[in-house]
Image (cartoon, rainbow, N blue to C red):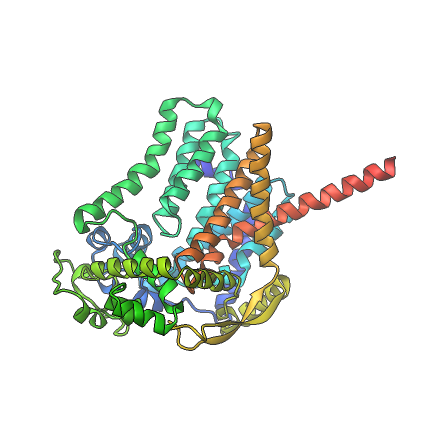
Length: 494
């Protein structure tokens, strides 16, 4: 894989990575510090005192999330003798540096000139909503880098001399993404790998197809089989049911919820609400004792943060299952409530994070101001007033919405649809078309799936595809400018 990616590290990549590093150092030097608080309360993590001291068994017993990010953070803390903050900061800064280089190479591979490629890469990766991920141990930044690497691997695949190796790289990157972030479902992974196989279909045999598909299927399937064996559920993320509960039931008018509860259509879990401490649910559930004795499964609360439950606690599993049943019952009886929640989630997708504007670093705040102008941010409101049991209280929060983001994402999705239509008509597709189709599919998948079964996390989901969307958006703008100039030149010639 390293030899394959070395071809991507051009002069544009080096310059973009170098400038990104300088900006990172300046932002850090002017007051932006690496924030390790997420390690203590992160819902997606095994309790930190357990994970950092026993990463192998902790990850083996993980069921709420795919394993790679827990394995990465826990492994770093366990292997290195330095403090967690320093180790995490260096490791995630390196991920950001690689991301800047990949963005530049991706722009170059799509056909932009070197200077434009560097500029676009810096816009894509110094966007404060993305850039702040380099100062916290969350997985949004690394997921964004993986998504860019996948599209770059598709672009390289068409011209690669060793097609099997290129396909293995693509399959490994796609699998790593799914095993890092549960949003990217195995169906997404198989679809993207299938695009790569279709691109080089005339240069491969059946054994190559089977070997390529074996990477995601065996890795993802193996992890799901492990969860089936240990916990009785073949899944990459066990808390999907409670995610769905949070996405639907809060919107339902309280009187309707109480009626459904009185009729026996939903359980007491629906009345309690999602993602609370286990003590809230214990009286509503049969007595439970964890079947396994590892601390990642036997402790209901974290010792590192008294307010944060350990959602990997084994007795949460039946709660998640019942919460999902309740959510489906509400969707069947009140589909309009589900639709209202989805509209709220779609609006939340384009809300802009406030954290960069509150940074201690004057440089980070200046970047936030500059990008607010570029995005054409406009003030608005996200409100849960009128909901039956609003999960954030009677919220009516003033937020900024990035108006430019809406047409950017819409155009990328439409371009993918156009490529697909052209393929169906002409039966041909260039390498760039395949890469654009993969980008469009990933953007649409992120927005739609992120809104379908989740409530309140959509802007965070969007930041994972922002770098890729920025590079492809710049490509589409450049193509449009060239087309206008060509038309003008041809009209002058006539």
